[in-house]
Amino acid sequence: MYRSILVPVDGSATSARGLRDAIALARPLGARITVLHVLDVYPFFGHAGWSGELELQLAPRREVANELLASAALDAQEAQVPVSTVLKESLDVHAGAEIVRQARELGCDLIVMGTHGRRGLSRMLVGSDALVVLRDSTVPVLLVGPPEKASLPGGHAGS
Image (cartoon, rainbow, N blue to C red; front, side, top):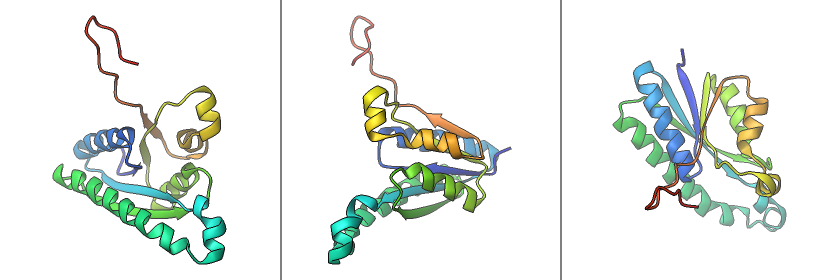
C-alpha cells in the first residue's frame, strides 16, 4: 500500500485538514509522512533580488514557514507517525510544480493535500496548485476539500 506520503501545507484550514487526513491514513498503514512547505520566492525576486534586499524580505517568511512545519511535525509525532519536514523555495508561479518535483525526488507514493475549492474567475486568476499536481503527478493524489460549512438554525448552510 502506501509507505511514504507527501503532505504540502500552507497554513490554511484546508491544508490542516489534509494533514489530519494524511495522519489518519498513515498511522494504520505504518507509513511515513513528509510535510512540505513551498515558499514562493517569485514575488520577491524582482527588485529585491537586484537590490540585495531579498534575504531581508524572505527571512521572516522562512521563520513562519519553519514554525508551520514544526507544528505539523508535532501533530504527526503526537499520533506516533514517523515524520520529516521539507522547506523548498520556488520561483515557479504555482507551488504545484514543486510539490510534484518533491514527490518524485523523495520517492513518495501518495500526495495528500488540501484544496480551497476555488471556482470560476478566482481559479483562473489565482490558479490552482491542486490542478497542477493532479495533471503532473505520477503518483496518486488525495485532495481534501474545505471543511463543511456550519449549519445555521433551520437547517440552512451558511454562505
